[in-house]
Image (tube, rainbow, N blue to C red; front, side, top):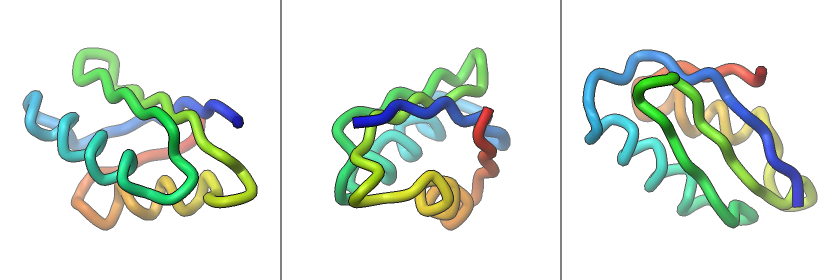
Length: 70
C-alpha cells in the first residue's frame, strides 16, 4: 500500500469533501481516503498495482473538482 497527498481545489462545503471521499473510496485498490476541506488536501491509501495516482486525480476531476499530487 502507498499513501499520496493530493491538493484538492474547488470545494465549498463539507458535502464537497464527502463526495470526493465517496468517489475515491469506491475505486478498486483504494483502502482509505480522507479529504480535509479546511486544508484542501486529500490523503489516499491505495494499492499502486490496482490504481494509479493519475486515475485518482482523474476521478476527482470527473466530479468537478481539481487535484494534483503534492
